[in-house]
Image (tube, rainbow, N blue to C red; front, side, top):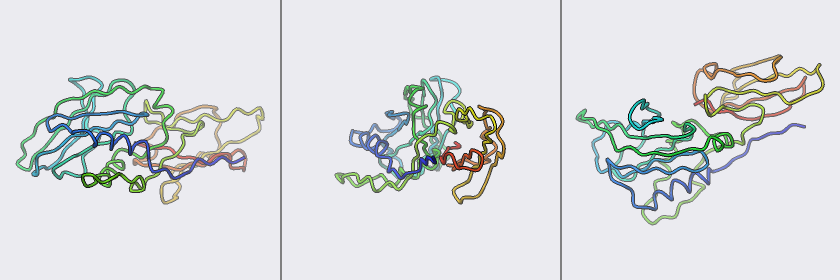
Length: 242
């Protein structure tokens, strides 16, 4: 029996997380606030400046060292701004903004901490990479008093496969074949990009469980896969390279 996990979902949970933060009074830079739900973190603030070059969002597992840039704010206009981290680390996540003005003056925002349960990451649906999520933020900024419309978010998510999935702790792809008493069965796996172009083909899988390095995909994004048992399609699903 073929099981397909493709379906359209307007990220309702993420939408309401984001707008519940918008409904509250947003802190003004250098202060930021953050909320988490179901393994997705949202950082938001009010920007009072209109001459900015970039705002980089940085994340660390501690509050002082090892901050690394995980993405950039797409809309630099004054007012409420936000960043969605759809792929946080398990445990503690510290966030801060690195702001560059048009004059090349630079400074950091205050830091904010969120804790993400590792179990939530393992159960989370397949989300696009963070840079794709930021494009959605721009569509969510509504006029004051306007009710949010979930249909404004034209995005896709997918149910996580139990056989082929992105490991949220490493970013690599875990493959675990279905249990089979038929030792003569031959499993194969092929991945496609968003244009349905084949990017990786494993014609004969001999190991029951193994890991595919994410660098095999060369670029970030959502990829479709097809798993076959002998010549029969066993499962179609999606993974994220982020």
